[in-house]
Image 1 (tube, rainbow, N blue to C red):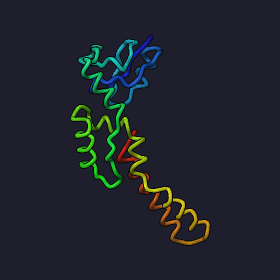
Image 2: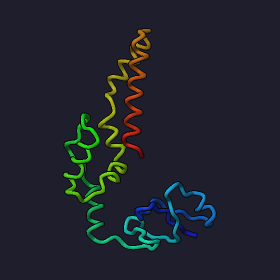
Image 3: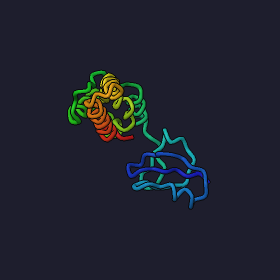
Image 4: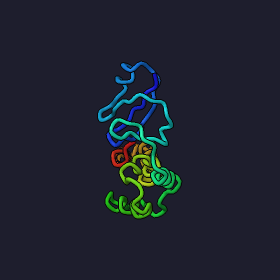
Length: 151
């Protein structure tokens, strides 16, 4: 049997083909199941019913996939970043959802420079004590970015 797993906003997250009991076991918190086999890019779930996206919704989705705001820089806090995203897309995208879809590109921008890591590794190999602290600091910064921009 074919099933669609969707979130509380009605966005179809994935399709599965298996018995219903197995499909139910694949659900995470705030995920739901509906029978169906459709193009998940063209449909959403509204009140437990498959509904085709309007042409405007499809255009907005395409627009948000094709472009990336050019003025996103490493020094932005979350509020500033959200404002830039919202302004760039003229309010046509859900900023939180856009950030999740683009987490990888955002992480690349916000991660500390690789030079910091290389410098720390060089100090560690040279038995310079500051290298361990520098490496830990680098790792901590990376984990902060991973938390800030989750998958």
